[in-house]
Length: 136
Length: 153
Image (cartoon, rainbow over all chains, first blue to last red; front, side, top):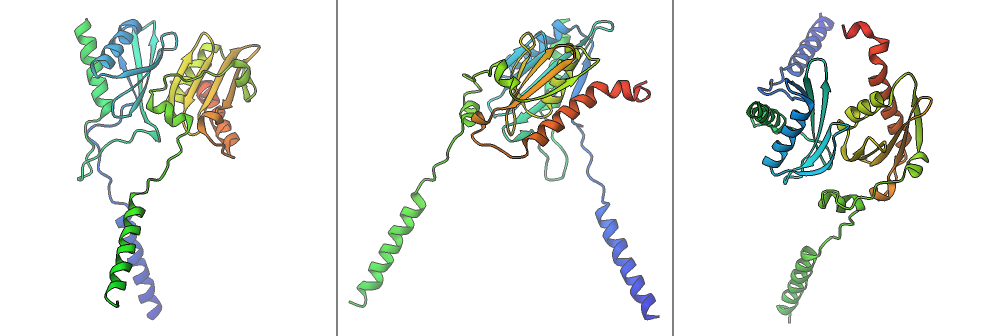
């Protein structure tokens, strides 16, 4: 009887522990965007990215059009690796966007309630989309 | 006399405390730290011959364009590309520790990697494990569609 009680107690503790560990993590309203496709040619997308950088007062560190690569930095010491790749057949440009800091990948900011703020990647892609639409 | 001794002792203690707090710790900045402050202006691009002294991995059945694009996609997730010229085949990457790549088309596509210790200011011991991981990731990126084609249909 005593053994059964002990077993039940241990099981109960284990169930409580497992349940507390499997608590759901808050879901972000703005999932991290690493790449996005745009219905535009490579050249138009390249020019639009440069316009966005100029508008946000970014400093270009390196750019190589034959690779589709632009790297720029912002006043707040965030560095942005941008890669544009095109698909000639479908006229779609894929834009990769990766923010980095001196110490490694840029981490998103979250509010105290656990919600993520609309962050650099979302803002960049929105800005780029607007610029491309204006240019049409 | 008995009243003066504690006052003197307290004064000495107070002076020592003030000097201790006001002392500035000197931070030794590496070349890399200085370049970060200047947005990488004045960065010296390493020679091809120097990069070739580093580690090598070759990727058969792939073109230079394919390897170059795959390398860039892999690198942008790992560090800051501070220099890239496809015509010359050189990529300089700032991460911990920084490295330079040289990609050339020979019988196979050869990728050379050399660590920029002078820029970093120190050496780490497990660098060969990091370069192996990079070469493996690049290989996986290049050959995954050929190996597991059914995953991409």
